[in-house]
Picture: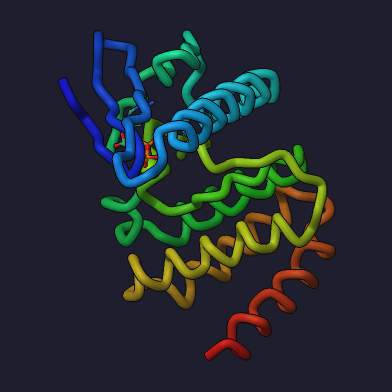
Amino acid sequence: MMIGQGAEAIVTKTDATTVLKERIVKDYRHPVIDNALRKARTRREAKIFGKLAVMDFPAPRLKLMDDVNMRLTMDFINGPKLRDVFPTDNVRFSKELGRKVGVLHANDIVHGDLTTSNMILDNEIKFIDFGLSLISKKAEDKAVDLHLLDRALESKHHEVYSGSMLHVLEGYKEGNPAWQDVFNRLEKVQKRGRNKK
Ligand SMILES: Nc1ncnc2c1ncn2[C@@H]1O[C@H](COP(=O)(O)OP(=O)(O)O)[C@@H](O)[C@H]1O
Ligand SMILES: [Mg+2]
């Protein structure tokens, strides 16, 4: 059964506990480039899932990687997307989400696509979709990750946005001991964004 179709992948539930994420061919890209890109993202996501397992981070566990057919098999996470429940209890969810982003960053994992559509509520918030993630120690990369989350919250959850980002940042401090460096960077990133306007 198909359960998700994002920008670049089709996700199918293959049994009670398993999903298959297959990166689909993009006809508008040159086939050689398309193949290289899908292979790189498949491998990258698999590598990050491996790191997340070692950290015991709340995310699906990888079962199989197939970088010929660009497929990942992983645990099915059962629950609503955070997007659909966020406004009901956004203070609690915001802190938890911020803390978990902090933990990722403290381990030098930058998610790359932090939106409430890439988080599933299953007793706790679990993160998915690490296809654009990178491993980086740079405060700049982490600040951009937070900035994109800020933008996503404002556009998808404008009714609760102003308070929720404050709680995200409060949670983040608990998750990442090096939060100060990242917050300093975030200010610069946001200034750049404003100057563009
Ligand atoms: N492990 C999983 N468990 C449950 N649902 C999933 C899982 N992985 C992906 N999905 C569903 O499939 C959708 C697309 O997957 P995602 O990894 O976000 O790919 P894309 O890069 O295409 O956005 C998700 O929004 C979610 O609904
Ligand atoms: Mg997604």
